[in-house]
Amino acid sequence: MHSLDSERGVETPDAHAAPLSLPPEEQARADMYGLLARLLLSPPDDALLGGLACADALGSADSDQALDCAWEQLSLTARLLPFDVVRDEFNYLFISTSIPRINPYGSLYIAGFLHEKPLAALRTDLAHLGLGRRRGAFETEDHLGALCETMRHLIVDGRGLARQHGFFAMHIAPWSGMCVEHVRQAEGARFYARVADLVSAFFAIEHEAFEVAEDDAPD
Image 1 (cartoon, rainbow, N blue to C red):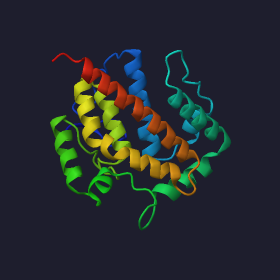
Image 2: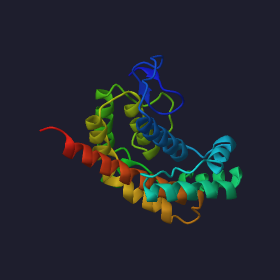
Image 3: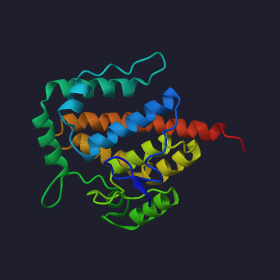
């Protein structure tokens, strides 16, 4: 693997390379994946929570209603809940000295146990992409937040839709819906229930867009 990509769990081929200039819609996708990664890997700090509370609506003439609604509800919840409440909620759901209430790892949902074959397959695919786990990262690569960060990297790095679709279909789509529903229904989930709504709405758009792009691709 190569140099580190910021403070998240993805190593990139060249951390000093100039970022590609992305079309607005691709930058928006990358930004959304980055936000979801940040929220799933750790609780938002005061600055991020304040930014969400003051965020503009996503709505536009061609926007997705479910995504708009999820974004507005997340923003509203960020206005209502102080940082320490959101932090405690994150710790209550995802952190434990024994077994956390929510374990957002692909291996657990696909194979029933942590560190199983799905994680090994993911690591093989990441190696082919020139990516890997950041040294010292606490979460394994099949954490849903880490997978969102990998998708962000694939977009920012200019990997084609076919490569993005393949990664999404193999490592995210088969299990993320069940995981997100568990977060949404978890006892004590308020802010993160709204995060779950946002993940669900965004992933539904991604799935549909990938399917359309595949249908439109030349034979």
